[in-house]
Length: 422
Ligand SMILES: [Zn+2]
Image (tube, rainbow, N blue to C red):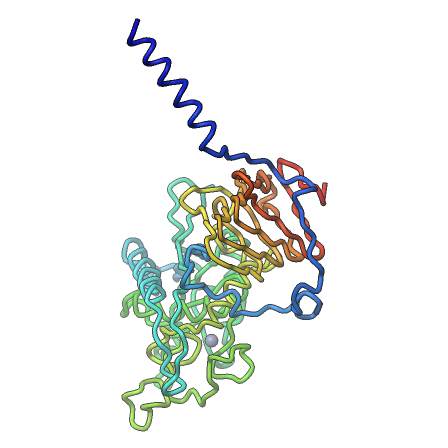
């Protein structure tokens, strides 16, 4: 009996201590009284409608202090080996598959290790991670398909770069043999025509061309490794993702200097200090991507209406705890963004979001006590046409999460109705 009495007494005392000394955490989804309106002139950027519409590529470049804020984007592609009906003019079977995999793996290795720009001499251009890579995308509607296709067509298998019979811009081969053209970048591997090769004046270059939703790679495919063509692949995908040639004045990037583009190799006479290594210049390196170029690509991917976005694996639909973003300092996302997991603004953290933010299906935004979320002329939604939970605010004692609004904000597709928009 004594023991039971002691246990009961211990429990009562523990309960009283808990009630006196601990502060329970309370949380609820946003209600009208939680929202604090800030003036629209909060900062100059908000009062200038032209500013609001502009796309600043650098704002889209990955933030190396918070790399998780720019999840890796996977660019889907498939490969088509074009051949004559006698099968003599291109790789077949496992050799072709190895060629395609060598090319894509080498391109991904190059892109995972961005290089410092060689031009301008003495530059301090930051070397940022790209946060995008290539992936072979099989067609799920074809059993056993690996995303590598073989076609025999005596009229369409070859590529002619110049001259009377040139066909490099022609889309006939793409229209006839393309697979999933609206969601997968189709890469056509095309040989030189045997008649061209037989000519003593013909220069059998290794080249590529970007054609909006597909690209052609042409060269000495049977005598070179797939890895040799990796930089051609990256260059052409760069075009498809919105990049211009970098040596030109109007490529939209201040960090890609103009130059004559007449030095392919810096060890050539007179080329030291005049040779670029940028992926969008012509040179034997093509491995450097500037912050502006990387930002331009992420901006294109983030724009909901862009063709380029359709080629990206939509990993922003399903919510993953491993992609949970926790804000602990002061962050401003003045861009369009697609998150892949929940978002929590922790105590002491402040997040301001402008333009567009997509939350994955079933996820929520949590503003912890002492955290601040500022919605600044933003649309928050689920870009996959489903729902997400909404914005939850937490209270701990006298401390409460803060939600502030500037201008016209729309919070859509939420399971828990958001007061201003429902
Ligand atoms: Zn080009």
